[in-house]
Length: 118
Image 1 (cartoon, helix red, strand yellow):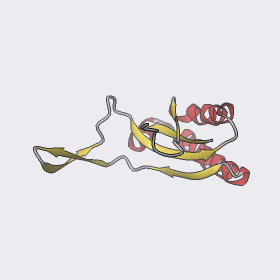
Image 2: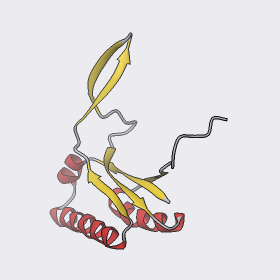
Image 3: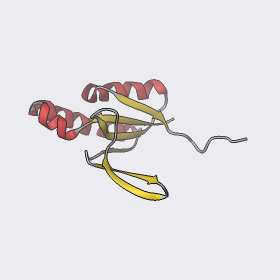
């Protein structure tokens, strides 16, 4: 089963508010968990995202580009993993380890294809 794990936060805010030792430990953890998941064959892809974002929308038939991100809180999408795991229990275990550093991780099952419309 494929899942996307979404981690929220702000790298800029983290660097400004967390002690250097905490930041180093978090970075070391992220490197280690990626290596572990790659070695187990569960890692499909993982990336961190820059704090800066652009939002593209259509307004009155015109494409409008705005600075973003626009989240309900100051936290925005900071990074993601796509994992191919044997069970939901396994992905929850992995997400729980990551949540130590971000407070929360959103899990989304990756669809195998478009929904049935019949």
